[in-house]
Length: 154
Length: 158
Image (cartoon, rainbow over all chains, first blue to last red):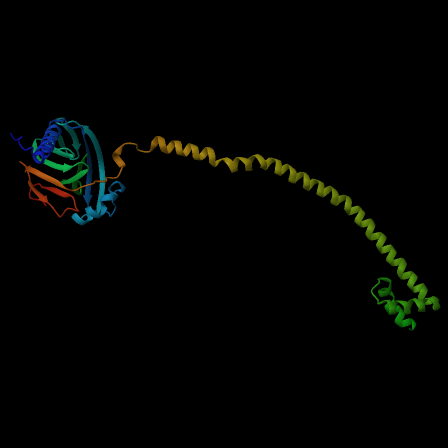
């Protein structure tokens, strides 16, 4: 009588694959930590040539993307929001913004963003970014320039 | 040496301004000439009187000079005593002033994030959906090195 041949070459990779699948499922199921949402409200115009010191790290990028000569940060707000929690941000010119973190893979952030002007829906979007990432939303006129929102989250 | 020459050189001899050889010649002449010897004695008396007068003048002035120096020294000492605390104060005033300034900076420097510079680590953003009821919305993507921009165009104004 002969003993059946053992096949260790399949067993170990199978266990490893199962572990990886279980780990990824556990990570997906784990509740995401709070998201720190950082909103900078900038007014860009062609009046003057000054750039706010708070925007010094973005000076070159702003000048590469836009043709304004002056960038001034009007306000800045930072909120720690749990997934599903909505943060309200007041914007100049009677506008407002709602930001809600939604479920995202690890090390990623997804934000549901809505910008309103009174009752009018100016923008509804969902953004997916790495933690520490940034996106710009601009265009609404404000005073003699335009408003640009710097939205970052980590 | 004749009397005329001796008379011309007599004052220099008395003052000690002649070389020893000429002084010896004059002395030799004075020993043999009573007239020149009398002249020399007169010169010496006048010189002695001048010296005494100068000493008396100096003595009188010395007292006044001493008094003046005493007053000057007293004034200097008084000024020094008055200035010493002030100079110490000026020397060390920067320590409490610096401490107060540091405390004020710590108290009033905006500790919130409102003025802290932005330091984004990534511009890799996925815009999953984009809607607007009141404006035209454009997504501007100028590459991975630049942030993505969602541009809202209201009333067709770009």
